Image 1 (spheres, rainbow, N blue to C red):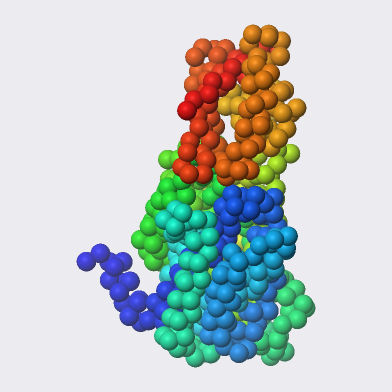
Image 2: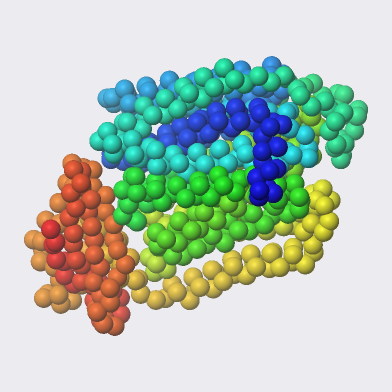
Length: 574
């Protein structure tokens, strides 16, 4: 039998509570992922036509979750874990059902309020779940145990797209996934009520390793379970390197939270179910490798696992940003998922190892608050950039829908530098030798610095080049869809009357595209250019309308006298 499979069977036999907690956590995260990442973006954009409100609504959820995490962490230390584990999913099971019942002028304010309540539910659930692992699992196996819980978190994120999209397409409505959320959370509540039995504290403080820098006098002066703002700042001072790392990492990942499904559907030309099927391999890879990868931190060192896991995530995110390809997106998504499967449990385990037992929930909540607040800023920025062309850089081939991926790659690279310097220097002594050697540290930091420098040099040299043909067409279509024909005209040849689309056709396209967006829930995809010669290229544009109707256009692009690519002719397909 495979060695790690035997270890897994022994591990599960010893820690049966993990099966119960993991099952409930998987159902809960499936529901939260469907709600925030799948259901809401599609519902807001294509049913309510309020995509501009997406960033505010998602950020409201993240804000209340982040602000409530420290308080709920401290409350769990005081009253026990189970009440919070049950209350969190129960609240969102109700609000998800109420969401689709909102209509009229107060729909958006109502959605903001409901998502604020959801944030409280999530803020009660996740710090409590991670702290429970610290209560019931000893130090030796904690990394693997955290990986089990972490894979339910990440697996729920991945499978949520598939289940949410399938529910909508099977029922033929964008509200079906909200009902699925309520069902999944109801199942999680039932499992926790019936099967989860755990004492308030299972591991006595005397069994914990001595915490460096925490004196007995300081610990004696602390009041477990009491939360004050001063307590929060104390937690920040205790693990400042983890707070900074959380801010940088989750700022980058938060940018993708509200827009990743819209990107796949609108710009990679995928259906809801198709997008879910492409994301599903990420969940499968994490599910298969979760416990073995979790043991990497236990065996080779948690600091090593954290640093190299983030390094892999940064490399994969650069590939996603640079290449517009479904295949590359899937492969890199798997790498990112596996990287966080390695890094995240090691990250939490390091925080636990640096914290006294009676303040574990408090400090984990503080780190979670930093993660959440950074994700809020990232989600707001990502949604704004995606919906606006204010930060497009078409001369670099980078327009607003993929700018968030570039910024995420930059931030993950910076997070990797923080991990290999500050975090490594403070926690490398916790790893078994050799850990992260000085040579590894120098190579990793140099590689990250070289990547950032290369991007800067590439941008400087590329900005003087013409905008690529497919980006020209994309900018033109975008302005027409937004009802801005006066801005779209700058992408059209104006110095040769025969080469310019007829004025009547141009105005008609603007009206048609706008009408499709409002009345037919249209989404469009601009494909890569097919070059006919050095000065001519053809770009295909597909509009996907409600009722599974597709309209195709073939746009001919030519170099103007100035050397810039301009639209010369538009041919309407079926």
